Image 1 (cartoon, rainbow, N blue to C red):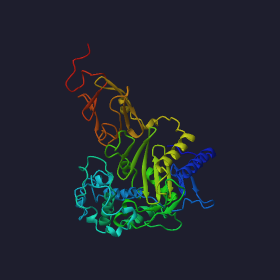
Image 2: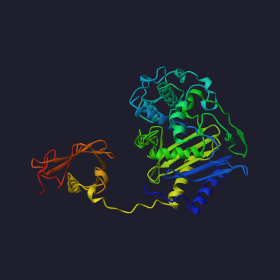
Image 3: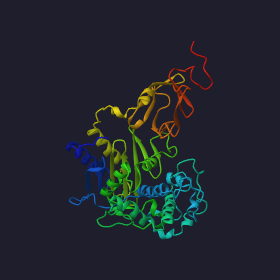
Image 4: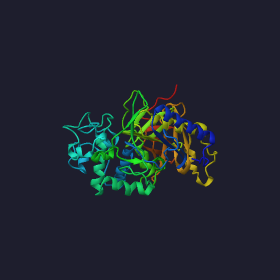
Length: 456
């Protein structure tokens, strides 16, 4: 993707300033801070406060709640990429003494294990973790609420288990592992388990009167991996850039893309919301946004990214309710994209010495039965197969060393494309996961399954 200019246009910045001013006033939050990241760089930040001259900065800490889960998911994917775990492993293979031994790591990461949403006892977010010191007693009795793997059911204790898994395999508290493996490499110096000055205080605002009261603060102990972290707009902006681009010191772009893949159908009648691996997915005006929201007593937080456009937004407030931080972050991204759409790279031909004549000969129309498709040659020997009438099998195809291609998306994702030839070496047909593509509709000279009688 071509880079944008370094700075936002003044009109764009003013529109963003206006949006957060409206959010702070209408949401009746004591303070609000936000930032926008574009192509890996923070290009705007803004803040509002109820006290003139005391607005927070991008270095002011807020609780980020369940955005913590995305940090923990990165640690688990690191374990997977190192070969220490498989996401299909049951929890008990690596961690004993839990109440969900058969839940797989993938199910815990995607909230599809079927276990309960909250741990036993009084509301864990407003009470000390010492009330639930034993990992084996997070629930009263059987934690199962649904059959495993069948539906999305958000589970905070599931991430408590994942944090304990990280501890067991790394031999250190999860917070120390997080600091060593993620925070320090990415330069997130202001992301911590407990608040460090300067930080905002958390408040509840009365729903029918403009008065407020402070919210309690506790170390949530075993439940920490579900929502313990404090961070800043500056740190989360850097984290957002990492989630879009990847960093091989921490986690590859490929593994991050896996985190953004929906795990099961969403809990709604439409496909507007889904969940991947430690990552929430939102579809808005035809755009897919990935990230996470967070809430803890006195605080709301959101980090969202339009990965295709390379634009992210962070929004942090210090009120228990009132502001739709996901709506705010979505609007910040949308404002930038409306005011300053990315200018595409100019079309350029492939380099002459990079074009294989045999591959070039494969391009053009192919037919699956009577359904016309077209095969196009891309850079680095990649191929693109797409139907001409909107219905059919569309896939981007990655070249392999053995002369085949692997579909990376669409219905045929993971399936192999082979170029089949006759005895004299001429191309007979394409085989994509048993689907036969021919040069003519139902070509009688090709091995179409079931045969063909010919056109009459």
